[in-house]
Image (cartoon, rainbow over all chains, first blue to last red):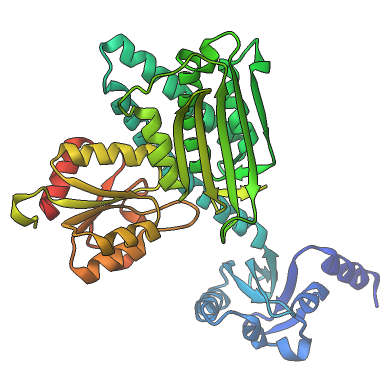
Length: 327
Length: 121
């Protein structure tokens, strides 16, 4: 073998693409090693038009028609299609061929490559899914803000008191979204949702709130609902409940009940103690409606909000699901 | 159609608690009696089977990969009219329900009034 041939063979076999050469009429007479390694074929299988056998039936007709046009016109060829690997799986390739011409300008051969773009395509698909999901989330979030405005307007005695309520709920919603954004909108951990929702209310005296529980992951909507529910609970505790008195405490704890019913269940408890005796407001506000009705339904569980001697208690029993998961 | 001049009964399916509260209030304000809201297709179908319905308002995507399509199918079989509310717009509607009315979130009370009264008021 001449040096030039050896060098060419080395080059052809070391590039990351599949490569091939064809006569001016498109008859393929050579492939690089990577082609054979990927497709698990031999030159005898693939020579001429044999390559059609590793093409996908949904694409092969179009591919043949377009490459045939290039053979006839001498125009560079480009197409994207799946090629079957030796293990039977399909990967996507961006394929190009350029004519090599002699001094008179006549095509003397074609040089072609197939570049594996499967991972790029997958990444593009993931990005599109994420964008669709984000668009959806934006619209739903606007509807949630509309809901907060409507709920805050109810029973507000004037514009100022409406704005106070609305602002603080909007900030709570925003805080829940910050957690989601941190995890590319896939969800958040219950521990993070609890500690971040309460943090602004217990600054300076964190010891008044005790938080404990195992690692639980919340889906995006469950994280938002938990964040909003906790905001209502802590607001009430600060204004009227345990945290309105110097000795008051809040204990938040959760655990898994793996034995009880047929389905593993998260048991989440909010317990206030040491606060002033709280009288039942007699009407159901936004908080109790969100917690007792909304969360119970959304997470398909049982939720009870009660005023006991010792203070407000909220108990939730939420079956594990794609919205409430073991981390 | 409602019986004996009673309020028309509308099933509401919406998984996000905050949004469900909003639409529930809006439907009540428009003179409907709300059945639900249900947050899952299972909850919704259980309600459907027990209650008389004049119509339904369905969120399409119920979170965790669940959709309200089984509810729409059930309602179609029963001949009960429904409208979709969604953040996705027309693109999110399953082909089987291509001619159902779609209201894009967020929407105003008059928009909801128009679409609900057109279909089951």
